[in-house]
Length: 260
Length: 260
Image (tube, rainbow over all chains, first blue to last red; front, top):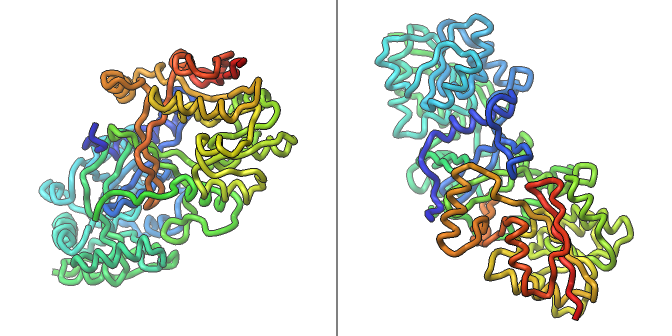
């Protein structure tokens, strides 16, 4: 036996089961074949830290959102691309309000869940691939900590360029992040320090997700301060126009497309 | 970085945090240093399967118990050893009823949690080590699936002999197990089949527990049918006197000490 997970659509399987638990439709995870079992997302960090988090929040209706999610959605205008649409937590209420919203995800299972929940406009793939489609947007949403998709100094320029290629003049990015540097927990401060010694940003997490027998490959996910975000944005087609940190350590960053 | 957990008192840390969440006393796990985070026990199986389970149930008062726990406790008589006392879920209500109960655990953190919750008689160690103490019992409890502590054909005789060494004449063991063979999930049936090909019992799970940066070493934990349990007990100082499977696949097995 290998002790290693099979590579697969962890996020899609997780959301499919979370939807089954929430709706009572379809096979639900059971303990001993009988007692309901909550769907738990398992996040492993490459130093051996592991965290389990109930997946139900991916389906949260606005009544259960954090305050910054509401403020993010209030900033939406025009054609909107929800980058990492997940289970459609944000896209579905936007669509219900009449916002022309497209959900993008690399997980086919996540897109299935969105479709079953009623999200109409869905695209499978990365922002880079989607840029070739010719579709253009006024607002890009990176919610649910998806500042993380910038990954680090290596990936951020390409990611921001792909968003710019998808952007109409005057477009904005609304990105939610978490400043990781308030903690004194040595498990985290030691990790940040080791990262910096290796030339990485302190909160450049190397993670994989696991659910049942499946795992993702290891990937970088960025948890950074607003200052670090500002330095990643510098030199790109975007300008960091605003940081709303009323719910610190969580924040909403607004990027504006520079005039050309 | 290693991707491997540090070996440590996973169960104790988990229960300590679960107690802090339940009581509001002491540092509680937080997401982003701010939002409460449930305590999740992570169970890895050696084929790469992983499961996250909320730890709160370890503190459940009788109102939240499964029916078989109540029936187990109703069978208790005399001096009682709760083997794998955990957070004292069973021992504390027994003590409140006036039962002379001793809680045994290999986790010092679990014993700390028991002590803080008010369990008075606690012993650190294994049944084997405790047998040397000279203390003797009328009832042994293996609840919370602790039939698992029999591990398999290799360990079961020694474990049952240690209980017999701790037993007064006429003593009983009340052990709760789960029959694992009702499932058609190939993740499980395939595991059972591979186990049997290697000469192990089908449900002889090879597991480790993880919590935050800590992990246990890999250990065997037995999930077996009542028939398999009967065959493990055969030839020991115990006789399988009764199997209550009213809540199948969960069951309560009662072992009686043979007359000498």
